[in-house]
Length: 451
Ligand SMILES: [Zn+2]
Image 1 (cartoon, helix red, strand yellow):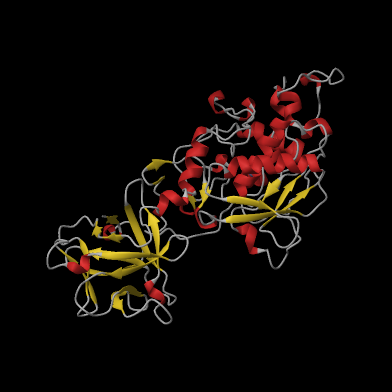
Image 2 (tube, helix red, strand yellow; image 1 turned 30 degrees about the vertical axis):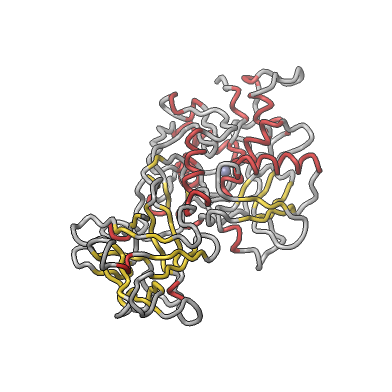
C-alpha cells in the first residue's frame, strides 16, 4: 500500500494528557529519520532516502503511553461546561482544574545539559505561547522551577498538564515535567516551533484536540489498530484507551473542534474514513488557539484597570429578577442591602476602591452616617455585613475581582479564610445581599456592573 509522506509524522508530540508522564519509548525505536517528521514534510528527501512507498519502517514512530482519562470531577452547576468564556468562542480543549492564575510567572529550568543554541530556540518558542496569554515563563538557572525541562534522545516528547507541574515542585524538584526527546543539531526551526509550543500549551492546561468531546473524528479503526500494533506493539484495548478515548466533558472547557489547533496531532488520511478529517503537521498556533489563550489567561490590565485605586464607584446588581439593584451599606446598622437608587438618601451606595495587589480589593462604604465601613463576607454564615476594619480577624473584607466579558461587569469573590460560600450575590427579589456558592446558573445576581 502506498504510504503518504506524512507517515513518519507526528504522533511524536503526543504527550501526556494528565499527570502521568513517565512514558518511555514504546515498540520500535525510531530512526533519526522517523523522529523528525519535517524532514519528510518540509524538506526534500535526502538522496539516500528511499521513496516513501518503499520504506518499511513504522508509520507511527513513537508514542507516549498516556493516561487519557481525566480525573473524575462531578459535574455541578459550578463547573458545567458552557462552551464559552465571556460569550466568546473557544477552540482548544483545556483542563478546567489545571489552569494557572492569569498573570502568573512560571519558572522554567533545564535539568539536563542543553546546547545554548537549542536553549534559545526552546525559550523563543515558549514565549510565542506566552505572548498570547497573560503568563510569563521565567527561565532560571538555579533554584526551584515549576516546569523542569529534560532534553533527551529518548524519542519522546511530553509535558505534565497545567498546574500539575507545580504539584511536584517540592517533592521532586529535579524530576522533569517536560521532555524534548528528539531535538538535535539537524532539527529545523519549524520543528522547534511545532513541538515546543505544543508542549508549553500542555504545561498551561491544554490537552490534545483529538480528545475533544465533540471532535467526531471518523476513525478507520481497523487501519489504526493495525498500524499501532505494528509500530507501537499496542493491542486493541490500548489503542482504544490511548487513541480513541475522548476527554470527559465535565473536566474540560471546549467549544467547536478545531483541526488547525497546534494541539491536534497529525492524522494520516488512511486513519479516517472521511479524508476531510485528515490533518497534516500543525506547526503554528491556530487563530482559535490564540483567541482561546487570551480568554483563558486574560490580560490583567484589562481585567480590573477600571477599578482604580481610590475610585468611588457604585455597584449595580445584574440579577435577572426585578427588584432593587444598588449595593448599599447601611452604616448605622452595619448591614448591606440592595437599594432602588444611588442618589439622595442612599449615600451608602457609594464605595471607595482600595487595591490590595493583583485583582484584590477592599471596598469602603462612603455612607455619611457613622458606623462600620468595610464590606465583609462572613463566609461561615454566607452573610455580608459592614465591619469596622479590614485587618486582622476580618479576612472577608478582601475581595478578588473577576471580570465578566468585555464590559464593566464583574463578580466579586470573598477571600475570607473560613470555608463557606464566596460570591457576592444580590437577591433582587428580596433586596438582600449574601454569599452564593457559585456564579453560574441560578445565581445571576453574582454579576455586578461598575458605575
Ligand atoms: Zn501532546
